[in-house]
Length: 329
Image (cartoon, rainbow, N blue to C red; front, side):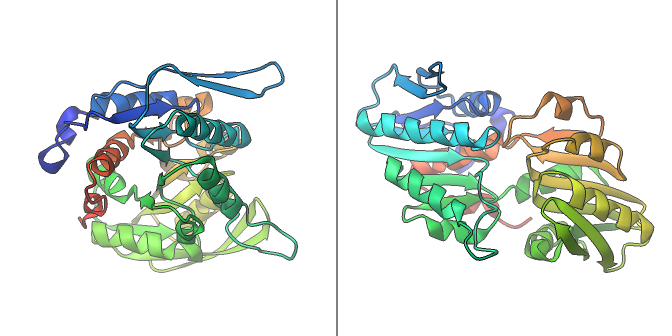
């Protein structure tokens, strides 16, 4: 993203005590944020011993500094989560003034409730771990469930990719005869928000899940005949729901189907499944480091979220409002 994305209140002039510390989960995104803010990444070694224990050493003085750790807890989720916790502890013991965990993709977010007896609420456990490690604040993007913000007893900003997605839709597609589609009932609020920004109608896919990781789309609620459909969701993992939804939309008369998803987990053979599906284009953000399969796929595009995150970090460091980034339109 160009530097001219910053203007007015968001002109690049970072406070002198702002420090960026990058973990190993997504180096290209960390470098992009660093370049946008004109703040070099703090020299830091994150290594592993032979038994895979994580070792961290910060090579610069961070005493009294406002530190932002850039680390998604994506695959390998446990390694990246532990790396985040060790980085927080390292900065805390180095006397940082404030530690903000910037977690573009918050792993374990799908385990936000007890679906059955004797099951954990692991996203609450992860929130506890981040707090106890010493984080003063959390900044994340498109949480799978909004109530996860309440799992933290420290300030937590949940950013939204919607403004970036809307801009890309206007640049990439014609908004004539456009319908925004939620792939399941749980995503209706997200779909309606995007539809309001695009001034488009919405439709809903009525989904019945046979088993974890498997989904059947039974029918489409709403008129999509002769329409260009955009599936919107926060996470795409196996890709089964999206592929089934696209098939049903085409059967219902949609002329083409695109999908916009914030977090491209895309595990297993998901990319191949989507490449051979009715989805004309899948657009994901770079909250998760794209794999070689993602980069090679003809119908998968990656949208940078670096400017949004950089602006949020800058506003937080200046003690300014972050919600102003998400005005309608």
